[in-house]
Amino acid sequence: MTEQYDDNYATCDRTAVHLNIYTGASNPDEVTRGTGITPTRLTRKGEVVLLSRGRHHVSPLNAWFLDTESHVTSRDLRRHIDWMLTRLVEARFDAAALRQRGWEIRFNCIWWSRYNTGGPILWPRQLMDIGALGLECGFEFAFYSDTTDVVFAEDA
Image (cartoon, rainbow, N blue to C red; front, side, top):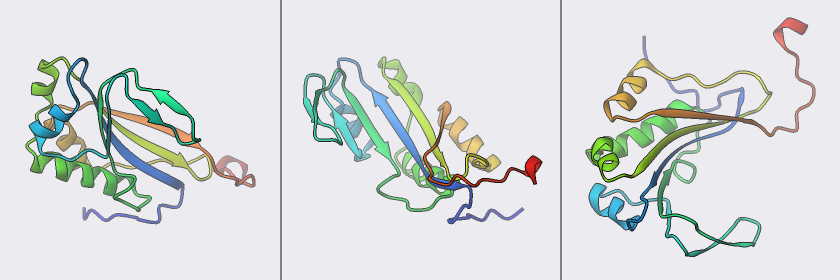
């Protein structure tokens, strides 16, 4: 079987992968120093953060975030996963060592459905690579499309 991406994935409106590391009392810059990976963003406990709608929020935690949203434009989750895995493998990411410090790690795949049907596909290689890095893989699904004339197979 040949792996091929489908960058225009018909049932997907938008997709992304997020790696979130919550560092407890430790400065999240320690993740950057330890991995060599530049985060998409980070927050420090007590820091004032500007939210998307112009409101301010005081961060309740120290956290380091890396996501694919500003790096990958494909609607194929597999491409997002490969982008993330490439960075983690190159950095010799060691989830077990980070957890030993008491840090919480979340590897999440997010899928916004275009028609409230369908869903992402992962290749076996990706599942094995995620496991080899010691990561659990979470999924979040959402439906935000304006499409209302969806025909389901059982209605056709």
